[in-house]
Length: 462
Ligand SMILES: [Zn+2]
Image 1 (tube, protein in one colour):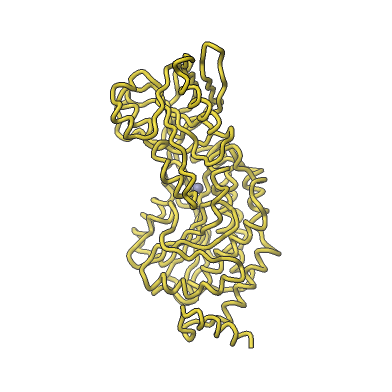
Image 2: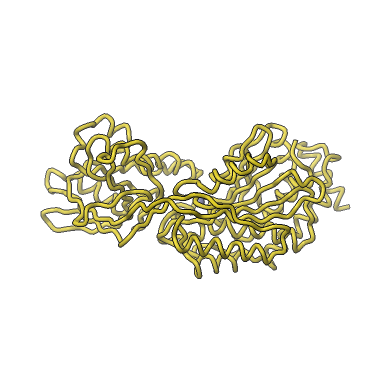
């Protein structure tokens, strides 16, 4: 009876010719996966350890080394067929002492919260004091040209609030953080401060990577993020600049050390029928240094590990080879993702599916797929299986920074799509801590990942 109801429902929705898939068996298996994740899941305990015992783990740091050793040891406990490390070269940037910044006026100094951007150089020991010029875009600096000389350029274009997907709002603003110093440095600015990538008004500065491109040594200038509260204050004061004399003081101590090594941590269950068809689930093991990287991307790490743990525990022997990859160095160089794809290419490995979780450990809503029409249609045909779990986004476009180098014409890249509304409350800040992750939401994400992997494993790609 149950079978008939499901069959009829799926036929009515008209999205599938029912004979292709065994929906009854699949819905039972997916139910087991969700039950396992929610009642016997390990993801939250793992995250507790990674966040609270290891903590921040920027590439090259002690935390990064500890996280690699921990990831390997935990995967070894799962009884996988193989666990190994893959060495990759990574940059080694350190923040040093906490940054200082204030707005200087004739009425006194006003402290604001700032943090150095990853890869930035330091200020001189005594700091930098200069006039501020506020801009909305890189183009505006290009137009101003030499007028920014000797000044601190303040990029203050907010993330566009009207965008529903906060990742898109981020994408619309982050050029200021990534390239702001490169552009302003060419015209002789002495530093840049960038409005934090945050939709909320609060005191957390948001770090993140930046690049000097091919600027000459003397065109490299210190770059910092300022909290949205700080940015609003500075903006208000600059509007009164006929009455207030404003200068800005910035001091930061960060340093670029010589490149070092880190590792992708990889575990594998060999496929019983098609061992040469590889499916990857992963996230990135490194994190920024201000918080403990629980959402970004501790959540994706433990969810990916949980996928393989559940396959083992539920006795699902995959038809295809299933790998978990804890990628190194996503945040400031993508060394892990690039290194993994290069090795795969060299060994002529065939990756048919890769799924990444790197959008926070929030309630899962669905997936984004980058693939051909046939594979997308196949995924959409499975949509009703996810309906009981409130998973409804099956959209084109998606993947992840670590897995994108694996993209080929005929394979499938998938990004887990959690609810994104609160992600930028935490992203790259001191607020990204274990307490900010909800156990149940994290576990639902792991189950959602395992379920789509179960289906691709069973039916393959088109
Ligand atoms: Zn991330």
